[in-house]
Length: 274
Image (cartoon, rainbow, N blue to C red; front, side):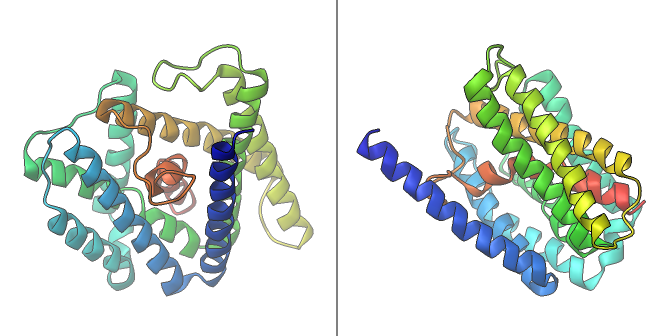
């Protein structure tokens, strides 16, 4: 193993452990700690999206994006009922639906207008990241958040491992490294993790409902997490970059790490908060 590869793996492991420690802390604390964490992730993602669009000479108004998104996130504390209104639901379903449409069409809409390009960034961030906070702070939020995140992380990990070991058939030309075998292993492992989290909560005396519901939820979460990953791959392919940024040593950017989560959490939150 080369020194460069060893160094890269060391950076990846150290960064991963730091992120895991911070994640466990803020998820456990909830409240303003969770809000600040989501705000930081959102600001970093805006920085990355602005930078990627600039590679195609697409201008934006970063200050407008940062200010608008910060105001939107503050509304989680000031007027949280907005997010359960028809407007909040329209934003969430519109952004997720738009991403799915782009993935089906295999085409990313990148407007040349600075106003429209900025608006795309604002809508995408506000239609996804706030629901990380809302899912954690909702009813049974800690349990549902842990179940969703563990299923996503397990799916990502075992889809990668399964694809490397047994992958033979490419899943899509959008991401040549992804395989059908890896995807199936990822869905299976994510589903099993959801059932495992349910089992732990059940043994601890939690009123968590029937196991089969959370098994089905695990299937859905695993599939949608990989859809989110594919959409980001399509976006980066359109831009012509490998990583969204180099903010996280060994991992790329925040968007690279959050892509599997972003299309899941808005739908998950609305599922549990009809």
